[in-house]
Image (cartoon, rainbow, N blue to C red; front, side):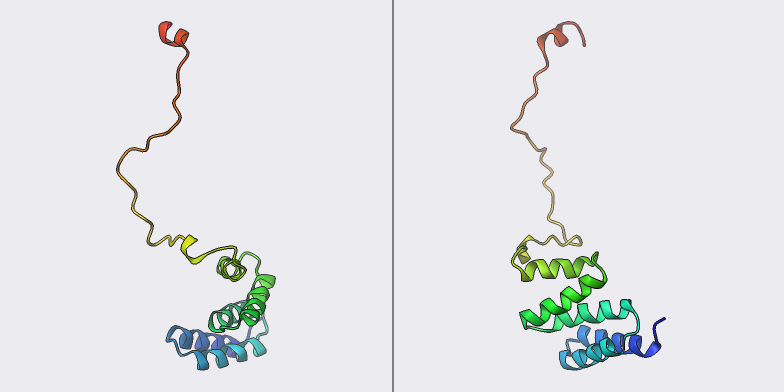
Length: 123
């Protein structure tokens, strides 16, 4: 069962992070990680700390910890793939801002020909 204190520290750290006040965010998130008595708090604190640090080794440590707790954490997996050079920022599709689709019908280089007997026998 998680305590209110570690969750309070986590919420404060996230608030500072969103306000782009990185030093207080780091202090709160590190303290939340130290005080965490549940995996959920540890997962989130590690992930948000990975977003603050510029040191690739430290970023990898936080992302590895996040994925060790929750292997299905998509944002952490994506950040680690980018850190490893397996994914480039321009390859990421923002689902909220998809490129517009052309209204032109798509043509295929493939054509399909029905056998002549199907055409003559009404099949």
